Length: 98
Image (cartoon, rainbow, N blue to C red):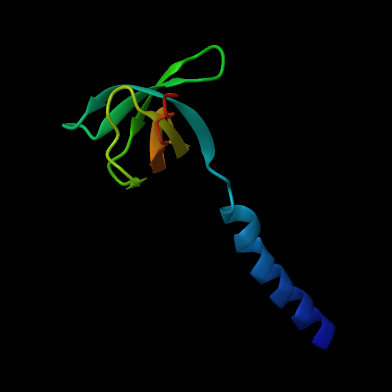
């Protein structure tokens, strides 16, 4: 009886972890457009076919406000056809050699 209880307890601990641990997708690219009214940004993916993707950043964690021309890395979840950013990280601009 004791082993059955331990097995069930172990299963109940692992079940939420197995179901709720979907890793967010990540994209890196250049910001093409920022729409402050709808809290959205359009990013051109740096990987071929260089698709332009629109992200909702209303609830995203930002390290800095993205602007057109910035290179960003975005962690996001897909909710139907909506791409909801969970984290937007603006990457440092490369330094030009002197």
